[in-house]
Each structure stands twice: as structure tokens, then as C-alpha cells.
Length: 116
Image 1 (cartoon, rainbow, N blue to C red):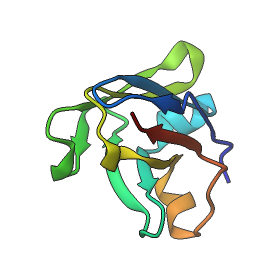
Image 2 (cartoon, rainbow, N blue to C red):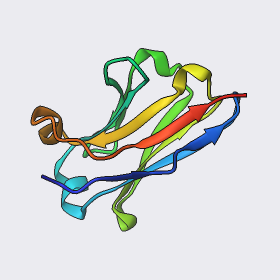
Image 3 (cartoon, one colour):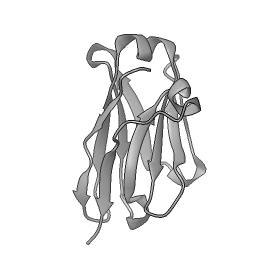
């Protein structure tokens, strides 16, 4: 399994922004699609978006242009930028590879709490 370490979450007011980070290996960035998921309290984990090895990205419909995934190959890091945060964005955010997803292997995630 590839090592994935999420960070950057926190407590933020509605309308605020956060940038989440997922540090992984150089190999993972070169070989795998990196995916972001989130899990709100009491809900199933849901897909947020992905960045493919080509650098192209794809997003879930609910993102509505507020989320942006990028990567920095020099830092072996994938980012999830979230703008105009809403209370419904509260949850634990995870990054993963398709292999990790298929084997149900997840990291600790990073908690995002949106509250006034």
C-alpha cells in the first residue's frame, strides 16, 4: 500500500477556505490516480474528486466549482482547495489511490469542521 498522509483540516466559518494536503510517494503520483473522499458524520464516505496521472481532474457534481485539486510533484503532494465552505462540507477528508480504495485501506484523514 502506498503511504498517504492527509493534513490541513480545521475549524472554519461558513464562506471560508481551506487547502488540504495529501503527502504520498513520488511513485504514487506517477502511477496512480489520486482521489479525494469525504465522510460526514453518520454518512457514507463519498467521492469528492480525482487527479489523474495526466494532471487532468474530475469532480463530483456537488462540488459546484468550489473545490480544486492540484499537485506538486516536487513535494509529492496532492492538494484539495475548498472555497466558500458550507456547513455540509463538515467531515473527515481522505485521499487514496484506486488500490487503497479497492482494498478498503484508508489513512487517518483530516477533519474539516464548518461552523459559525
